[in-house]
Amino acid sequence: MNLHKELFFTRFERLWHWGQAVLMITLMVTGFEISQAFFLLGYSEAAHIHRQVAWALIWLWAFTLFWHMITGEWRQYVPTTEKLRAVFIYYTKDIFSPQIRRHPFKKSRRFKHNPLQRIAYLVLNLIITPSIWISGLLYFYYNDWISLGLDGLTLRMVAGVHLAMAFSILIFLILHVYMTFAGTPIMAQLKAMITGYVYLDREDWNSSIECHILVVEDDDLFYGLIHSWINKPMKKNGRNTSFLPVMTELTHVTDLKQSIELLTLNILFDGEMPKFEHA
Image (cartoon, rainbow, N blue to C red; front, side):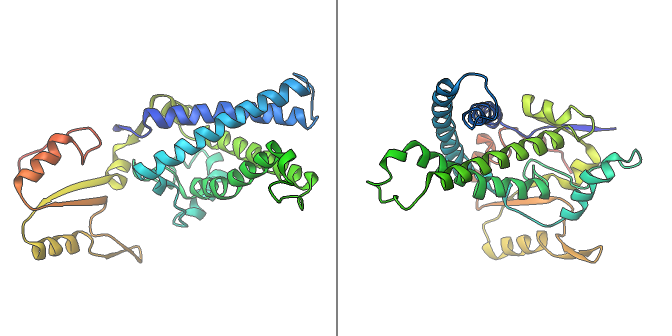
């Protein structure tokens, strides 16, 4: 098997991932103790740790949201239904079959999450996380409800929402761990989140990874023709797809000087200079 090594997860992504995991697990342990599910630290100590860790996680979430917005990584979580059924069948049925080895979703640096993961992250980020934020902050400022005009709320309702979202995060964590060790080899995804590198089959890589094309052309009309040709739709298995078999990204400059500046700064290639071959 011809493998290709590619950096998928930056240092910040890995620090954010593991930091969030530690903080969330700590919140669940202390939170369930506050709810008297078990006794470990004592109510007062558990409540104190829960408050401090909650603030730390809120700040981490806020900074991570800012990072996703400025880097454009938020696009990784845009949901899609393409191959959703195939991925669902793979994790619930095909993964237990020794005859089926390949994952139906071929990931790349631009498309790191499969359709099932994208939907799960969307629910987490748009429903679970805001709900637990808001209910947790209401808990913090319970004594100020009247002055804030929130006297119509009841502590039972806020506590119920907060606890329900905590169980939702616990379910998400269990499924997340399951999908982490559902790959082949079993430790591959865990190692990727530690080192940042993913090993892809060269055959899969050639058919899935994005291709950066730098077009040096001072005629806008001619560039438009090139753009149209690259993105020309064609039929494949009865479905529309692009002319090229890879995910492409065009960058247009009008002169050689601009192209040299881009290549020198490594803007197009995520910090790794490409190797050129003469035709």
